[in-house]
Image 1: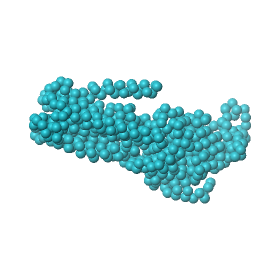
Image 2: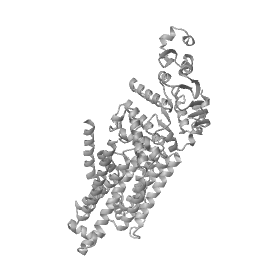
Image 3: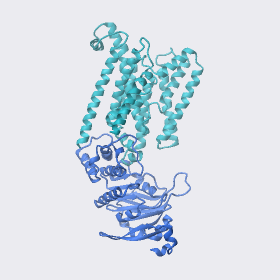
Image 4: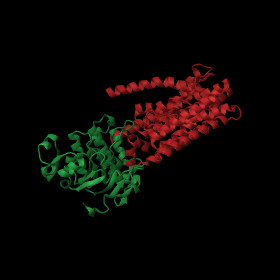
Length: 282
Length: 340
């Protein structure tokens, strides 16, 4: 826990959320920190509260208890335009109602700087061009967005968020339903942006890629933080097995720059029947 | 970026072309009618010179009608584009949220009350009151259910309100004698036959205020078109934009219904045609739809007057009869473009 991060980036303390009229907290007290230059992944089973936590940290929802802040100010207090200048967001669902080209989509990232009136200046065009380049969609700029593959679409959306020239990125399951290559491309881009000093916060189901790319993980279980810390601290077999309700084994992947990255291997029932209790598999 | 500059040039050219087309449509519509005249006579008469009878026909009858047609056509197309952006639905059109039903209730109630000849402004005033009532009612229902003005709730509120008002119209009509019934039905079919400079001034004011304000929402509309959540994360004040768009698009529709009754098709299809031909970027789409509507309706009105002269066809019938084949052609062209 980098409590020393202070007022930089995102910070939640005992954040709770209950939908109006609901009887239980979908988020029942979560702590999280994500500062500049860090990539933090929020993990957890479906319905654990990942997206809710992200929404609290983005100010879309206001916590019904506890605090969710960005840069020391309650997330919901940020003016939308000011927030958009600082945080680029990739929502989970987005379906254009009308045809739009990749270039137009990415150029929309300049909205927080231009508002409804101002004409784009050379600096705006440069920001768009740089974002297209970094996400390798510059060649697709003239193409209708609807004709892109899933991976290209996600890169184009990411380029829009980067065109905002934010200091932080928040992404809700950015690699859901992408193939290996496209998935890796997204993670690599995010890693590069974190290296440039961005705070990167994302939700994901990809435990193993999160372990390889993220600095810290926050594992949610039914609205509470089950574990939080480095990948090695969080992805332990007994924790993951309990949270996901499925037996797993954790192996170590030796990576040149990062020794001992944990990799989760879900077990087939046939393996567990023949073997020791889960705890002893570690 | 080179690509965007050439798009800008293409859009500028299209706007200029549509502007010329609108002026040409107004002049053509002014030239043709029961009394024949050539374009030089029309232009002279507009300036007030030439045969006094021609001057009167042009200045008091044909020109206000043609200009009103352009303003109504433009307002309907702009309103339709606004509703499509607001509701994120290409099937939206100016009357989808009950404005025309509200206006019709006002108009039919006025006719039913025997107010046909009492006051010159009685009928349009009653229609305007009905339209404003519908606008307020839908907004009220929509906001009550959901403070954030969920567009699905707004759509439902509009459809329900429209259905209710339609029932009211049928109820009122069922008690009418033949002549009042006929006036009411003809009013609802839409016509520009009663065009006056007063109506032009009213509609011009509606377009100047509502149209300019709606066009200023173009960039927020672009963001909304991608996704409502996304627009919010880009810093668009989504709720305020929705409310403004609803009121402005409804206001344009209400103005046009008041001066010309219900004219279908224009508000649905003109924005589509513009989108298919030149793209849907709203800073271009909104003014282009206005100009295309302004070019289209004077021509449709010209046909409505000429085809069965000296009688007139209902304008809404003409707009559909020429518009539908044209639009089907565009769709087929687009389908071929996608396959290619």
